[in-house]
Image (cartoon, rainbow, N blue to C red; front, side, top):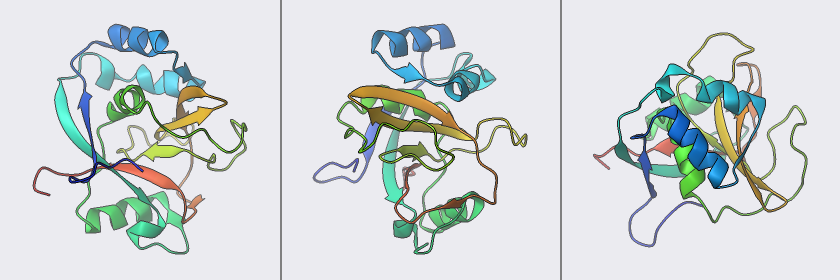
Length: 173
């Protein structure tokens, strides 16, 4: 869980460096990428994003009030009803770099057509309606190796109650 003792959430610096520098920083930190993450990193969002400080909170689908699970649009709507916002796409790689103490996943399966165990998905607005284009990033540690991975799903895929997502906590909270 990403939280501090007194203030909810995890503060992360996002942006402020061009894509080439960000890719170098990820590589130097030993972060592994899948092809979907590479596709997302090529998005114009990463051309030269302005630097900003954001507070990120983690919620399970169940904590959003969806005890039976839900499709992504329902998950996002439930989060908005709790005062949470979607993260800018750029949060993914910066949160991966900042979150150095993520617990190792209980299994080593990297792709199984389901949500990977131990993953934290970054809840971000979709950047393409194309079903083949990745929907966003997720963070996972497998066999001690930090990963920044992209994922694809349609709005028929049901997110299970235990799936974890990172949201933006607005300044007003």
